[in-house]
Length: 224
Ligand SMILES: Cc1cc2nc3c(=O)[nH]c(=O)nc-3n(C[C@H](O)[C@H](O)[C@H](O)COP(=O)(O)O)c2cc1C
Image 1 (cartoon, helix red, strand yellow):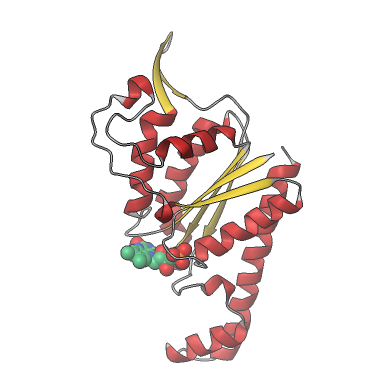
Image 2 (cartoon, rainbow, N blue to C red):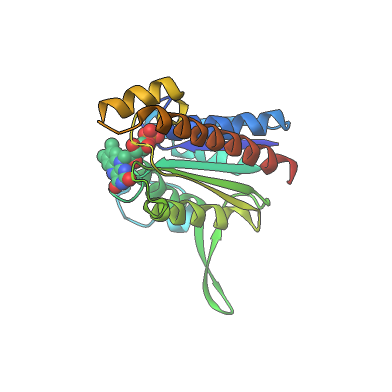
């Protein structure tokens, strides 16, 4: 089984990247082959809005990394999509890729009920996981990202299971990897009262996050 992941933070070792790696570790331990694409490393040009790919599935403007990525997505038996919240939504670079994917992986077909949007990817039931990290402590801040990612997973999952990982309260680089010593220093610098106690609590939250990410990755494969 092959799991393909699209990582939408520019920073390696970031919160999104770390959570995604845990998901993929769980999937590998359960027997899957995994492939992660860091969206910032891909050569993807911005969509020109001509809509011709909706007819053909092929972009007539660019010969960049899109076609190869579409092949990889088609081979996937499971999808993991992750992006930090930037200005309440996914980062522009990540959105730019998804703009290009619209006609490449979707087509609009007439049906008895009117027009129907269908996936161009080979039909497979694909389990999917969406990941959204943000600085705000409010989980709702991740909502727009999760809706956006789930929309893609629904269309290409053909009834596969979808799980969400919402990771609020992560304002620092790699915060989700920090132990209580690192967290205490950070909280002290922020002028928090009782930094020691808060750091122990935050470390537990980090561990729970990563543990549940691992479990979700494992389940994605085991419950296939
Ligand atoms: C340009 C930019 C915009 C951001 N906008 C938001 C925002 O609207 N809401 C929020 O809670 N955090 C926002 N953040 C914080 C990130 O979502 C947060 O630090 C996240 O953990 C970063 O994920 P990463 O470590 O995977 O890159 C923003 C960060 C950047 C760089």
